[in-house]
Length: 220
Image 1 (cartoon, rainbow, N blue to C red):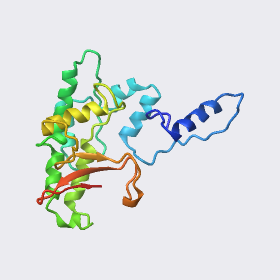
Image 2 (image 1 turned 180 degrees about the vertical axis):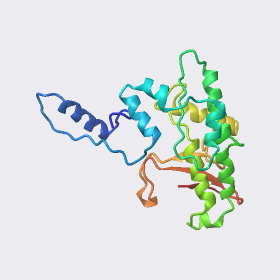
Image 3 (image 1 turned 90 degrees about the horizontal axis):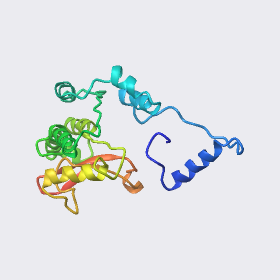
């Protein structure tokens, strides 16, 4: 996907072939898929606008600005399906300012001890139906909150990258970054390698649940 992160491994080879195909001398044919079946709604619409260089349109009319009362009120609703806000970081924002925004988000909705994701994971811990393979209202609520609480970054390295954000929030939650971070309830997990025997695939997202007996499970 030319609009996502750079391709790696086999995908990089395909990307190179497509670039070659754009050269009229080679006249190689390729097909571009334009319909996404993975996500939809405002986020998809606005991502398309940004890819086309229409960020000003998004900011001026399509999305409300990230403001305390507005986004908190919307995201606290269990039935929120399409809440989307923008907040532009500039060179004037200090690293401490960015870290503060991340902590505020995680404290309200995410993995910090008073966050909604942690509370929902703890509520599931004693629900035997879930651990017998059945769905329940508590599990449904857990995954709704997981969808709303994740923090996504377009880069892996650096002060706004995935690795730094994960480390920052784990330190805030656990007081350190352990070798094995899956030690408590409400920590998101993403699969990075297909595990067909478990019916889990690259990109699948789950969340940890610590049961009363001390065992930690990951629910998907």
